[in-house]
Amino acid sequence: MAALALFLALYFWAAGDAWMEFSLEFITQRPPFWYFLLPIFWMVLLVELYDVRRASKPRETLKGIGLATLINALVYLLIYFTSPPNSLPRRGVAFFILFVAVLTLLWRLFYIRVFTAPALQRRVLIIGAGKAGQTLVDVVNDQWPPPFFTAGLIDDNPEMLGKEIGGYKVLGNSADLLQIIEEYEITDMILAITGKMNGEMFQAILAAQEGGIDLSPMPQIYEELLSRVPIFLLEAEWIVRSFVEKSYTGLAYQLSKRLIDFAGGVVGTLIMVVLFPLIALAIVIESGFPIFLLQERLCRGGQPFNIIKFRTMTRDAEKDGQARMTEENDDRVTKVGWFLRKAHLDELPQFINVLRGEMSLVGPRAERPQMVEQFQEALPFYRARLLVKPGITGWAQINQKYAGTVEETAIKLEYDLYYIEHRTLMLDIAIILRTVGAVLGFKGQ
Image (cartoon, rainbow, N blue to C red):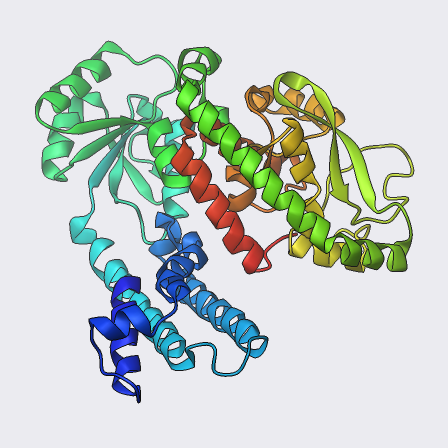
């Protein structure tokens, strides 16, 4: 849609051009080089909408496209009014913004109408009505539109038969499995049994698979739907048998990541140097010195290091010496600090940590030793975050705001473990692009 919008913009721009008509000569001579990069800039602004959950919601789609259109227009106007007269193609850019917004919106609404229609969805039967099955039902009920049609559940516990869980009925037990599959036209089964499985259920599932019914484990579906790891439903051996094996990365990825970290660290440090006088002056005028905050955090393997940030809180934010989590609308945050957090400018000095090799551009949030001790007592696998370097941004940071409670920290941990398990160069790049979108959208906290 962005490429088509560019073509239409060029065509209508040429139609009103006094010098030449639409032609190859017009395309090669009239638009400046950067004009052909507009579709890429548009997709960077829309990167938040390249999330299946957001892409299927009309409201999120309208909000995302509207915000991208506004930012596109404001950035261009800023450049236009600071450039020499008649040096920029006003009409060409205006046509592009108009066409790309309309075409993207039409395509997205078509996607929502057609590709999320019930007729195209899988028909799913959940095997197990215990904790895992109930958790999956809650996840499915929170999705709109639903990711698949859920016919119901089955369980060999006689007490569960006929009960409703989250609006879905327990239809029967293992002996009824093949009949239920035929009656409800089931296409997929989700195995949500965390304990031992009896022989009858095992045989029934095998028979269903032989009949062409797909079987998926509940943690896999949980990860697909939420891009998180279900930490409270995993057994201890998972951290060794599955997680550690999947989290291993090759030498090519490690070298590429380090090169990206170095390049990003250099660029980020240069940006910090340019903005430092203004930021430092604002901090000093409002709340005095110090300008920077040096705070002990844990690196990969639990090694301590000092993270560098612009100070955004009052000087006596922790006068009692006790580490406290940042809360929403935290009264310790100064007015300048609020702006720096919203624009993510407070994190610019962390690029120095990246150049030192203490942090990466992408990874779990660097946490304080006291918090790590507290959380690892309450949350299973919390220390697994230390298998990789902490990052300025990360999968958890772009998917959830700051965690102010243990429950919210558990969700962030699920995102962190998902990233560690699935990290690739493409995922790192996607996270960086989504972070750029968050910065441009003023979405910090």
